[in-house]
Every structure is written in structure tokens, then in C-alpha cells.
Length: 165
Image 1: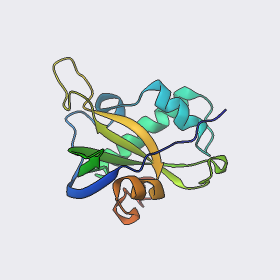
Image 2: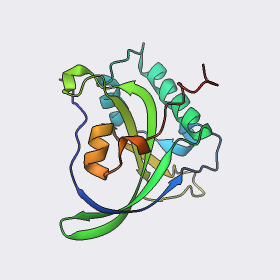
Image 3: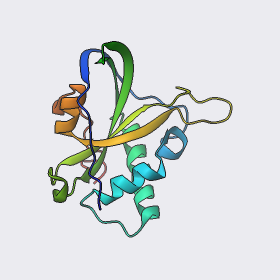
Image 4: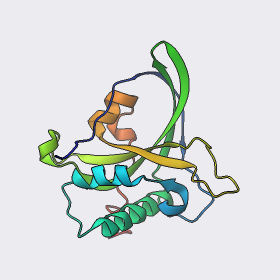
């Protein structure tokens, strides 16, 4: 049975700032942002677009991330989260993969965005640990509910830029 992307509605009280995502490695996902095989599996099962196999899907995700890094479309939002009466500072980044949610998930044909957060290390260390990880994939409506980030603030498509076509 396919597991549709889920989300919680934690209460984010205040946005502290927005900034562009920065990286010290070339603009590719495999050196900068890690995506677990479990996340890839759920993501692939829930997108409308078809891929021949997991390798091609991973290549597409890596290429899309690189495009978003080069186009400076990945934005990092610093938020104050109020969950269970504990206020904590969180950072989330958003990537536009130009993929759409299957209709069977109840939000069909809506664009999906990757939500990235810093890893436990928060930066690349001497062991080349990734500094960011993909945690989930959400639609614009889900992002607005969970993070109070509006549709007009989301990354634009890299593939729809005139220089890509």
C-alpha cells in the first residue's frame, strides 16, 4: 500500500529570517544534501511522473537539486517553533523538484517540494558528513499550514526558466 506524504501542524509562531542556501561543494545533492532510501522510496511511490527505476529517480533528484542550487532558488527559513510549550529555533530549506503528487493521495497534481533541515552536525565536518537532509515532501498547501510559508515564497521551477529550455 502506498504511503502518502503526511505532515503535522506544529505551531510556528514567528519567522526570524530568510536567506539563500549556501554550499561549499559543487552544486549537486550527493555532496550537500542526503536523502535516505526510505524517503526516496516513499517519494517515488507518490509522484505522478514515472521513472524507469530508482537509479533514474535518484539521478533526477540530484540533477534537480543542482539546478536549484545554481539558480539560487533554495531558500532557508529560520523559524521559532512552539511545540508542547517548548519554543525552539529551527531552520528549514525548500527545494522545487518539478514533480507532482499522485491523485490517489487526495491532493492530486499538486507540485511537491522537498523539505530539508540541518543534520545533527549542522555542518560538514572532517568526515564529510552531509550538512542537510531531506525530511519530507510537501505540497504548497501543506507547507503553508505547517510552516506558515506562503506559495509566493516557495522556490521557482529551474526547468521553467528560459535558459533551461
